[in-house]
Image 1: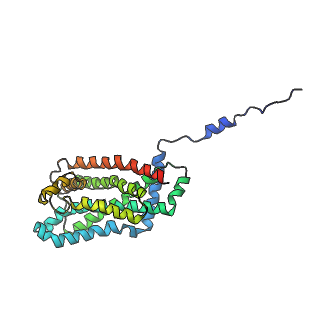
Image 2: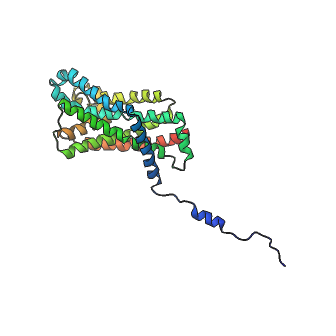
Length: 276
């Protein structure tokens, strides 16, 4: 009688390898959308977090139109027509700061440690947070136009150009939001994120054509104004809303959008991987 000197051959290893799930091409998109839904639910449950994108444009329009409108433009109505596209661009840019503050808070609370334990792509939480913030930018666009219409603002172009102006502003905010995301990965506290981002956004807002025509600014400042991304966004949106020539401002705005994503998205993802 012969004895068996080895274990019988088995196909267990082969079977396990065949049932191991393979990476899916849209896995990042699927998980990012799921986490974007989480951000939307969080916003829905804390509506007070939307005060900055609903109350701020109202206050800015009322204060600047009725206090400075007569002195700047000679007419509050004329200044409202000029100012509203700029206020929309400024508010939608400052609204992007909130994503950096929220991400820094979530990291401090350990929420991203839970994300790390899940079988999801490392970049999905950041991409999902950016996608989920689109609701804030849509709300600020609607609220700004709504209060503007109540005050007397009117769109002088066709509906397609007006919608294009709104979409361009939302796209700009989505791309710009990668800057506060990167900042949130590098600083320690939410307050530091907010302070640093306001220090960056405010010069872009005021050293531009948001409140006055760029031609009225000092010559030494116009060199910065001409390359300021806010200047191109405001000029593009103003032209699309009022039916005036936009020149190359739309293309410059799209180029800035691509630049924000190309520079700050990789930096934010790299800093995120190191942080967690």
